[in-house]
Image (cartoon, rainbow, N blue to C red):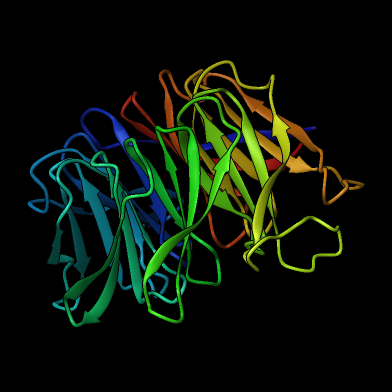
Length: 336
């Protein structure tokens, strides 16, 4: 028997809390929401408490926050069409750069594993790749218009400069920089979901991708490289991604977020039915047609839609969640 045990319930935001993001060391985290603020939380004794509140960076709702891999920078994406970069070179966290270019709401922001690139996406159907050009300087490397609807989420491969995006157009797209002409291009489009793809997460190898959708399914995709042992046909020497597993019948409403822990391989989902679910691949699973077991269902995890789930990167099985109900919760996944 597995269980998700509530460690602490945190109230600090007014209105919807959209996103939570662990610092890479897992000792503190950032949260953001409808109240246009970012809150930084850390442990004070046994309890988590607000350490810092970042204000004046945005004019509207803050949709997502993301820590750089080095942990020194925090990026925030807002409905005011900007992305802010915060750091504490001065001793206190301050907004020292603002990225402008999206026509309207920015929905997601993510740092590449090297920390040299940043991706943003938004309602204007575009994905932007930014390069860290110097201290507090960011240059637009590419504007990718591969989707034909609102882009909900961007995520980077865990070790390579490969970017994935999820959209209202029901697809996931992957992008890479062409080494010949340095142009970013869409190298793959993943078709299988029947409605909006809300979020996505790579596994620790980067060879598999989990996606979640308004169609109430989670899909697992696998990359097949040229000359793969399985004999999957790969044209033009580009890798192909195939859907190798669909988890259906578990969720009763839209799945808004998915998190794949790189230390424990546990998958957590955030759903519109107010439930958090934990899955893990079965031990005797076929890598080309895997099976995943539902280990835990936490009913009434929140009183409204669960917007985001995030595993502590230290692998200690702590999970953060946040919701339309204005609350953040810290959970511990344990074997009862």
